[in-house]
Picture 1 (cartoon, helix red, strand yellow):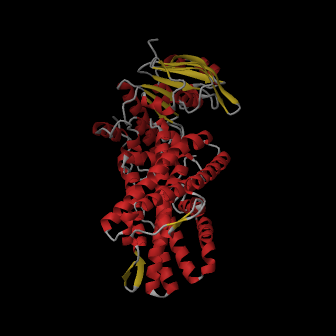
Picture 2 (cartoon, chains in turn green, orange):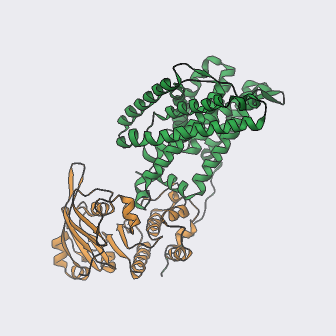
Picture 3 (spheres, helix red, strand yellow):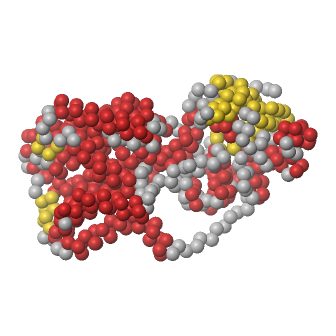
Amino acid sequence: MTAAPDHRPTFASISLAERLDGAMPVLLVPILVVLGFFAIGVPSSWLTLTVSGLAMGMMIFIMASGLTLVFGLMDVINFGHGAFVSVGAFVGVSVLIALGEWTGTAYLRLNMSGELLAGEAAMAWPRALGWGFERIIVKPVYGAHLKQILVTVGGLIVIEQLIHVVWGPDEIFISRPETLKGAVTFAGAAMEKYRLLAVGIGLALFLAMRMVLRRTKIGLIVRAGVENGPMVEALGYRLRMVFVGVFIAGSALAGLGGVMWGLYQEVITAGMGEKMMVLVFIVAIIGGLGSVEGAFIGALLVGLLQNYVAFLEPKLALVSNIALMTAILMWRPQGMLPVVKAK
Amino acid sequence: MSDPILSLKAVHTDIAQYHILQGVDLAVPRGQVTMLLGRNGVGKTTTLKTIMGQWAAKAGEVLYDGRDITRLPVSARARRGIGFVPADMGIFSDLTVEENMLLGCTSGPLDPKRKEWLLGAFPALGTFWHSEAGNLSGGQKQMLSIARAMAEDRSLYLIDEPTKGLAPAIVSTMAQALRELKAQGASILLVEQNFPVAKALGDSAAVMDDGRVIWSGEMAELAENTDLQERLMGLSMEAH
């Protein structure tokens, strides 16, 4: 075959400013940590707050990752996502209460077994619920944003009421397993064991999710589907099936995030998922809708900023995340790591 | 004509309130390159998208390999062996050239011999194999779009204006690649505005106007008859 003229490109060097602009979203987290260090001034307090902020951020990321992919893949705004957070928390906490003998002793193996079972239950129920939610509530309103908002908010309210029916209207207090109570001390800073575990779980989940998205064919299809769904279908892939799978996985992760958040706060309520949705949406929006990496960075920023500000100026803690979202959207209106959507 | 690989029978397609295809009858012979010609806005792209299922036919039948695929979803049509290269190329900008090519393989990894053949046809893709496809030039994106459709054996290729805005050297490369594809037994339905390319590649042709096929026959017959060209398209190929 006659080959086309071989194009031999010359690669121009990229200026430092251009390189920094591309890497800036990733650099924001260490920059915030360093700024926090100088603003707080006491290394031990800074370390405690940093671990606390990272733990909070990881839990928000676990809840937000499914939501952002669902939006990116099928343009579905699911306000009902908070229901999976609440259901996961109630189911998981119920398992922990039922396994009180395991979690009440100081044996690590028994505690961890209880935690694992609670985590699995917290994912299993939202997984099934997510499948039904997609089939019954979301499927009929594909492509209609206003209807999506109305029916998913309706679904959220119904599920919250069902939680009241099953578990009663009162909040439930829960204590952590014995081995996760207390703190470890490092360099004079007290770091709660549970927060360290949350950081580990969140980081492991992020790396696993990134590996699936970057290294597997299904991940490739998801990333391509977020960018240009109709073309993925024209290549022979059933994107609807992929979407249902992502929706179910995202619901399960929301459930896991719910039980982790419940243990973090040591109390759960039917409305906890609804309340978390504000932070979850902030994270998904500032990260760039459809971007898992963006959601991860956004969640860490939200968690760290809220903890630092709550220490420095408690009255400003509530508005810190809205201010962060405003600043980031003024800098990058599509979010930090936006997914390029095909026109 | 022997049993065509694709037939459209009285196909009507609406896009929003517009009635675009108004009874398209078209046959694509097996193993041939069929040119779909006509002025801008007569329904050529809509015809391809209707065959692929991206626009639903309101009435009529689309028969592929003797089977009615009119109501099949897009992905099922692709899995039956229809490759599609849309006019906007459908490149995944955030993915690398390699990842774009992998998506063209629904049944497994990219066959090494196939890859060698495609990179021989389109060497620029090899140069940028690990680069993000969004950084490619327009011509390179077009090459990638066609190469991706060719990443697996398919019986029928629907290709929408592959030479639009490309340099002559790249056009000639694409034409050669399409000839080789045909030599492997594939059938091609090609929308093309570049008449010299159409004349050089086409075995048969169909001319559309106002949402219908108004003429079909041998490409050679159309290429030789300037009166016919002027009557059908208001333009002579010799003008190009």
